[in-house]
Image (cartoon, rainbow, N blue to C red; front, side, top):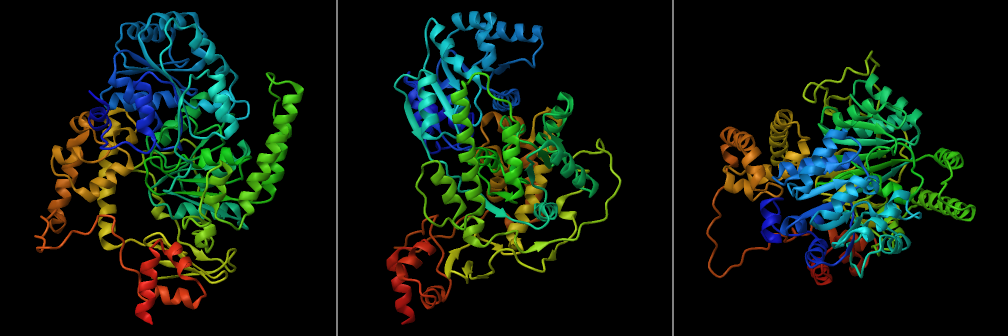
Length: 626
């Protein structure tokens, strides 16, 4: 198959995302490449598609066991023979995996970097027909990156020892200019095709809240999440224990995860979260880097991280499937003291000289100061993040708390009465109490952020004054208010999710491996009634339709029987001489929006920028009122 057939039939997508195709083409033509793409941009497809389009076995070097398991499970679910080789296997399992790999039975093999140094694996690699080698999380090779791993420095030696070096691809989501240079040099990439797609994640909403009571603020945010999945990051193990216990005591099942727990409990917590048995996991930064769960809808930082790199990587675990998601940071100046204390107590890196240690310390303090600047800035949060990574950004994004006034600045709530709980008393997801059943909110006596009011789909910042576009359906203090049609889609989405959960139990695969939330939401819009229509849903390749399609089609058929008015109707005949409006045509400007903007002292250019409309349209609208 060619690259387009693989994209459609295996992965269920019609087109490549930004930056993917040049990287695929580089590896297919035998060139090295370096891909710097944000989380959720589809980095894995950049090496998986070339691996399937040519003979041989692709080797993927990945630092985390959990990530390997997720990726291999997803590939197998899509009909791709794949395996992983790491310390989680018994000696006999590892021997069998290497034997099958030597026979060419796998198209893709994931391997931990430590495994590259073992004689058995080196012997296998020397005689294997390697189509390509991909280095995931490539920033780990740089001592200036936040996840430096000395073992990555020895990857170049492994490549040099191969009888025939295949093309090498390096991939990362976060890399400053210095880290990028280190990746190219320390991995010995040869004239790589480099693609940097930018760091922006338009589907993520960013907010910084400075609450009087941090836990009440957390509870307020969780009370609005419905049945969605999310992560709560805490700075210390002690805080993880306190927050998880409070949530459980108040009736919200939440898993906990930190390095002080046993391997068995960490594994259980991770699997409970991945399989949607619990919808919230409270964790330190020990959790997440290797988690490929695509339907994380919110990431809440209970404490400020120590750097923007760490924050953006952790926050970026939300919305990996492209759905809208929230990244909320609860900030207090006491976080600065905690961060500095943890820096002072951290173990020095034995691989660095005293001079290098001093430089790293200075760099860490500078990163902390930049993180503080982000939390205390009155400017657009997205612009702050993007400019930190060297990317240009407009002064306003319209999707952060500094641009819209904030989603969580207006309400708090009375906590329910605690109840006795046991740590192990977390049942299946369909038996656990839903977020929607949490207690209602009550108003704060004082607002912590500037007041705003919603008019005609826009937010008026009466302090600046500025006119700001607002997310469809969003009302300050109330969140997203759905239309009747959206409510029906949400009900169907829940039924499809239940069908997916049942498939997950039968197949022992995480739900998002079968179909992510974005795929289910497209089903609620397209309402496919047969396999051919289901194939047109993004994320549903041929193998997935055959394996998992029938339960989804059954749910949709029953839904359409209940709601015959929702059945797709043929388009009305078009009048002669007219043209259909483009699919992305913008709706008309709300009545009076331009005149009110002019009354506030905004220029035509200001309004054109804020309303994202051509200047001529603004001038024409103003002329009507004249």
